[in-house]
Amino acid sequence: MSNSRAMKLLTGVLEAVLAIPVLGGFIVIASGYWVLVVMCVLHAVALIVCVRHQDSYYGSVMGIVTSMLAWIPFLGWLLHLVTAILLFVSALRSR
Image (cartoon, rainbow, N blue to C red):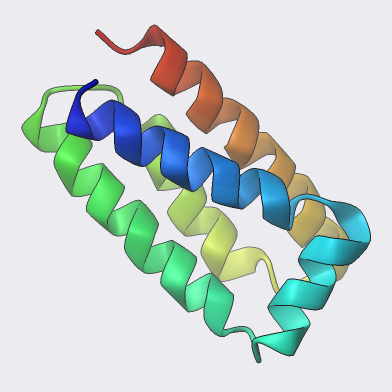
């Protein structure tokens, strides 16, 4: 498994956990929103790895956008869900 695919799967799983309605919101609020900062950094690392491996990186870009907007209650849930799906699809389509 390539590093880019592993990073997509890792960030996809974490986004899927944050997309669970009550649990994800609780994790974000309980961490003082720091989990969104950590996710933004992880998505940035995944983006760099994907660019270096010449792999698709739209899921990582969406993850960065999600991390910046996820503090908005219902929009955050929707963005986490869409980002998780994009990352999983991108990881499954990787070479």
